[in-house]
Image 1 (cartoon, rainbow, N blue to C red):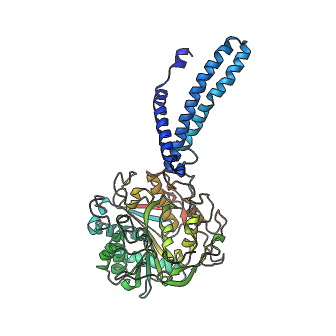
Image 2: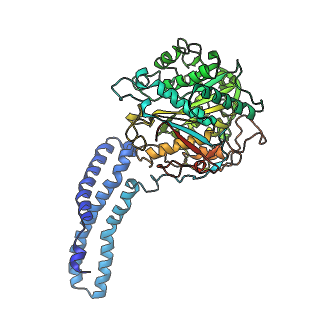
Image 3: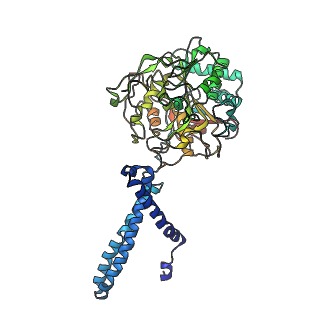
Length: 548
């Protein structure tokens, strides 16, 4: 190779040289300005991102200075030295001069390369593992219809107001997914009634009560996610007014099916989130058509009921819970014959990575957030605090408890207006998604299944398609290590990777199911196909509502 080719830099090298020094200088200045007045700021994410570039800039300056010094020092030595000695001296001096550049090359990629170990997506269990559950084992029905969500966004009213969501479209979407899970086709009233009868008969038969449907006096508990109105924060204050709680329109569609199609008495139904208030705007929309339903609110509110404790206990399957205040189920859960888990499609960028049906159970315990503490810390075992795969996950205890997951006849995920849930500003409002088929619109989706593991596996795949990397600016992301761990533990609950004996109802090993459901990830985000779609044992994702 000729000398001219060796000395001629490529365009990439020119760009790097032009941008590296100004960028390094600005990073150093920013780091010093922010950290010198308050040293603890060095731990902030922005400073942790700036530090490698700033240190690399300093190293580069040292390298240039040392190179100049080497040249000045070596010139008289080389002039009077023998060739062998000259080569040795040159080698030593060059190594010393290049040392800062080695530091430069090793510092930058650690924080800036998304493929580095600190920010790489976790290795996923492709599966399938576990046993599919339901009338159509492992089936997850997904309805997608942008016509359900005409809201134009912030500044145009609120997403939960009557005019912001098309109730008739939501009614059709819910009918489609319920009928699909029960094995029926179409969304006619007769099919909806027959589908609920089939779901309840399947559940009662599996519990040894014979193949029978709803009987008057049997209670339903609909567990929703109202964390935006959690009692310790207040009820939809200015910072939470647009927080994407479970949609009142989806609740309305569900009540309409139970009351007007399945024949359930209104007073036999309770809906709410134990530790949260029931917002006035939601209540007014629902109570107009279903005035005798029990609307659960932590704080006493007009027309609503407050939770009361029962004697049904939750036994946490970990010694970390020893010595803590015992947990009990509220009476509305303990006295219910049937539960419906109505969760949200959300990331959880501060603790769990995702929050779907499994985490929706966190609000199924009787606790007083403004009262005495000492309860088992549910967040201590979150992937943010313990990312190691094969660890105890308290969500599995909730999913396996006879009075919670054991009573759940249907799992639903409200994905009309999906969200991020993080410390960022956009955490408090719905987000339009970039991934297909949403393509810059609202997620406009509903999901249903009888398999609690399968529906959360599908929800996780949608969240991963939108947020596929570990965001270095967040505490945790859907792609972080440990996020899917509860799904693996639940799928293999009788012999989980953690080795934990899950016994939330103090059950014996004989009573334990071998699996709470099936877990796997789709083949790709374009086809969205699972093993069940190919006629094998696993998840079957059924797409409804147009052409997703």
